Image (cartoon, rainbow, N blue to C red; front, top):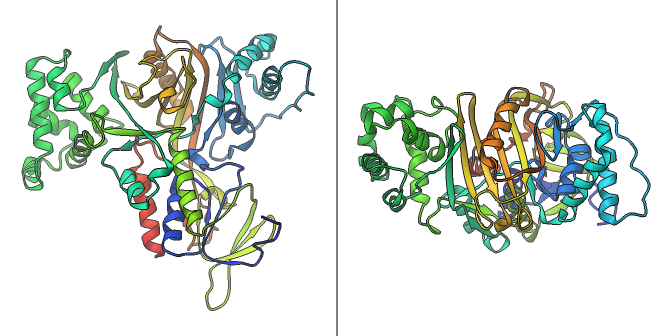
Length: 498
């Protein structure tokens, strides 16, 4: 596209940011014959749910991340114990200039450049003596650089969820490949236990006694009954907490209670869900099993939300949408006149639209909110649960609950012989760091060693008081395991604009 091609052009809607939420909105509007311009300031798609090679993830941490959204990224190369060198990538550090190209191999040279950039962020100057050791480890990892798909906000899709229905209805199934999430685990007292996914799994389980099997069967049968029976089941208990409801109605306790609350209903705490909301989540989970096999969830190949976002962007482009990456958005102003709307000043010109939908980070006066999600990504040197499988996990401790996703070469997320373990929980990293590290350690145990680990905090953004009132702001990926809240938000925005 030549410079100034779009200068002074009119659109129905301008969408700023190519995260999954924004991409669904752009695709749906373009399919409804609206003229859409979709812009991202970054040179890649995906926004806050982007997916990177390993080296690109490090570059994101150093250069591309929005420092208001992600104020710091802590990186470990090798062990994650307290004595290991930590690169704490914060906004206050100054980058060193990359060294000149050496005569070493391309991989070693790349590793040296990355280390040189990261070394500005070492938390302990004494660890500089490990320069060659860390560079060597980075070099080994970068030999498989393009075989890593490191996600910023990993999620999976219910087999009978809103995202899969939207993918089918939008006709973009040919753009995306999914793999079933075969296993669901709960981690309690640092012990990993499989959660039965279906009635067949309950009957076949060796870890459940006969009484426990009967209790679970009664729960699954009752919650998946028709609407009339479901309403009768809730009865006078609708105002109860979900945990109390399970204890009262089904006599669940201990491991069974935690499995239903955390591994099936995916609650963030025992008090988070009411009886109705908890039952509805269990109902969705159970009804999802069997649609595409014995699993309740599907995981996208090549990196979840980013790959799905690009598929919706492709659909938008096919319907006539216009795309610009690496584009600076300098200002957004209201227009005077009969049609009003907005003028968006770009790096190469000015464009106009009746509506502007934007990630709040594109508003110059936006600020971090009090809401934050702490995230961790850990590359392990061997697959903990198998080479060709995917799994979700719930780590349950007194300090909190951590959602986890296990990915391997099965979804082309890691090279053969390795795996990626994601972990996330609500709260600021200063409060949740120890919890995340305990969760990673409990799952990897003595079976696997960390090769690379990153911890970071993803803060939600909110527009400042001086923002334009009619702009439509999107939200950051939440801490839920699935995409349904993202789809619901996108559909509300589309309904407002059509």
